[in-house]
Image (cartoon, rainbow, N blue to C red; front, side, top):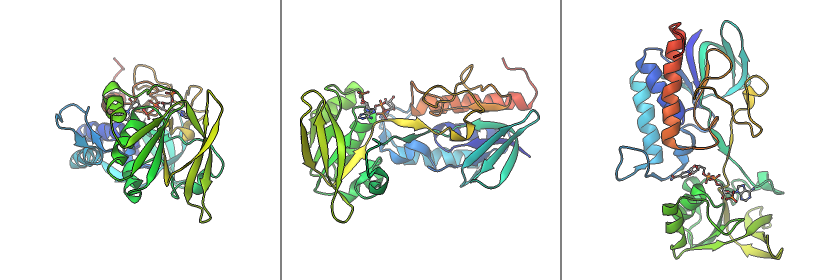
Length: 309
Ligand code: NAP
């Protein structure tokens, strides 16, 4: 029987692991389908306190991982696929096979990039369709690319791609960016980035080898359509929470975000929730880290039989 299992190895999961390990609970961290979470696919993080010159996202995650390991956290490259909350303890299935038993659980499984839901989407992922500029941007040197979205992620992706692509079309369904002022300002004054406002993608156009060659766009005001040749589409339209194993067993809102009481508590004793899997509002590295810390403190209290404050 484990004392505490932490599902997810992003900012929330790793912060929970640091705290739980320092409390000598020897947590087992399931790294999940995207080890390191969203920070592992980002570039410079400029708003994590303590790094006045910014810090590379993957580096920040590696530092947290090392810190958790140093205090005794254990890591497993596996994913939670089933969940059974019992009165005495919790059962958790990993990789659709083995079941683990644990006295407590921290769900910090984060969120995954959303795609547009257009025809051929699954076939094109990895063939000129992606949600990760830091992973795939360098493959598209001196060619035009498109970024879809108007939030901070799209701004970050577009700015990162200016290192490689000849031109970046930023395609947004409205005529104002949702991104923070500082990011929007950088995007709008960059000579390689051309915003295309009030526009949606209606079709991906693959070439005869199945590689992305163009997209069909529709202006949502004039309803006019046109074809835009590009070599790759970077989709940055937000994320969906990774909460499938808990469906029907823990409370969720209409979009599948887990619902917490008092920051990190679930309705089931011993099960705590932290980070983007429950956060539809802030979604910041530092808020995820804060929730991870709170979840580990609650686990410590729960395992000691102390009442919640
Ligand atoms: P977001 O803020 O939710 O923005 C998603 C964007 O995609 C919005 O502009 C939205 O349009 C558009 N969109 C959504 N669904 C769409 C669809 N089906 N078709 C076309 N466009 C669609 O998501 P995000 O940019 O991933 O950011 C999430 C959170 O992380 C935010 O709180 C953000 O501040 C934070 N973040 C921070 C940083 C940073 O500080 N460096 C970097 C990345 C993310 P509408 O505007 O019309 O809704």
